[in-house]
Length: 181
Image 1 (cartoon, rainbow, N blue to C red):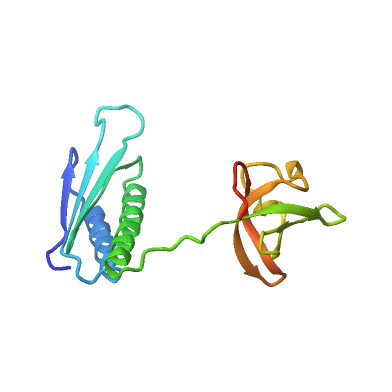
Image 2: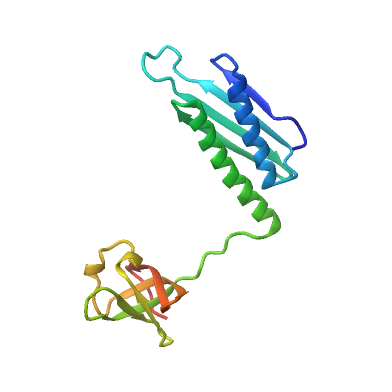
């Protein structure tokens, strides 16, 4: 990190233990982006006069070349949990920013369209045929949006193709207004 981590405590006395935890988590972000320029962490005690529970809010601002990232208002009654969740969110943002910079954005698989053509004798899996004649099997846990039992032969579906040990498999099978072909 190019600049030291800035830590601010709002509505509470500074705690070296909390600050040390925040610094350690901030320096771990360097693993994902070695050219991280700065990291500012604000830890605030909310509703100081509340009788039960004292929620903490954590805000993190990170500067990267060409990117300003922030995580705002991660709240929890345990300051360490609030810090962990805020830094987990920031880690995801930093990883995404690095991928975009490198041109490695996550590519989502292209869904295929097909028709349910049959079910096995036990009713534990079904088969979808695409317009090009390929067949894909699917199990109840591969169906999204409707119960497996509601699927019928002839229904038009959309799915994500995957090559599995058992052959071609359909994941995230959904029913709706899908075109075929």
